[in-house]
Length: 390
Ligand code: UDP
Image 1 (cartoon, rainbow, N blue to C red):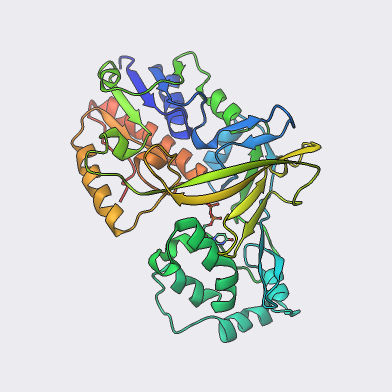
Image 2 (cartoon, rainbow, N blue to C red):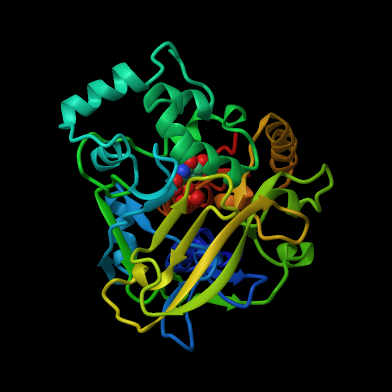
């Protein structure tokens, strides 16, 4: 099979992983990105004043159950042990602000209700005295929370936070958003329950640059994609916003964007990497203290982000897809346009308009690269999507 000439639009995880796979198979790959750095929203950068590794577009914690993906990232970068232990400052039953452990676990429950219950006692307390077990099939975020933790914990930890994060009442959001978070009847306060979890020693950008470091790959930063560029290649993998590819001709897919209010501190500001704020009255959702994402390093100075969420306007960085009924209808229309577009495959978080964790992005990119190689072998045209966005 003759070597092809392929264009990756976007130097984030999807573009890097697919590009690398094709480069290793002997193809020529060009990776472009409109930003001045690789890494997409995982981008990390060492702060010049404090030496702290900053997660420039907000915190990214690598966690997975996928052994192949874990081996893959470890083949490019050393992953240091890191467990995400999140705290929440919110009003307890006393009406005062208190600090609690997240995700909701036995410590949270005992502290919140001022009790000393053992696991089984806490379980029957929540099921019999807190949870609304009349809700059989929770469909909304609110129903899911009421069904599994009950009103008191829901209001303290989830209601205000979610209204701030999504700009919508939890009764308008799907249960799937809350299903990301476990409720535990033991003292395990690891935010994630995946087998593998860690942080790249030199940051995500260094890891992604190593993935891109191959003799068959050319990286061009600060380069906008154009149709002519696509025509000069045998196939395009596009990881930018799906609606953006089509010049927003049918309208814009709704996103939440984040504003980070950066501040510095001498010493340890909050004693942990992530402090959530459950109350609606506190305008930010969380404060992240970036040096705690690299617990093996030590820095006197500290860099922190107060995180505010709002609806994205044109020109804002898209973070969380809104995916309400209206957006799904628009998405379906864009999917039709994409399927009628020859020579382009849409990959990753933005081009498939989904809330994707890093490990899933890599898994899908590996699968897309293999699927594409199989198409080349058979002389078939590659599909617009290897993972359906709907
Ligand atoms: N959430 C909440 N309270 C919290 C943390 C999360 O209500 O203290 C809800 C919120 O709606 C959020 C969802 O759970 O969007 C998923 O949380 P996760 O921490 O996975 O969000 P991410 O870090 O991806 O923004």
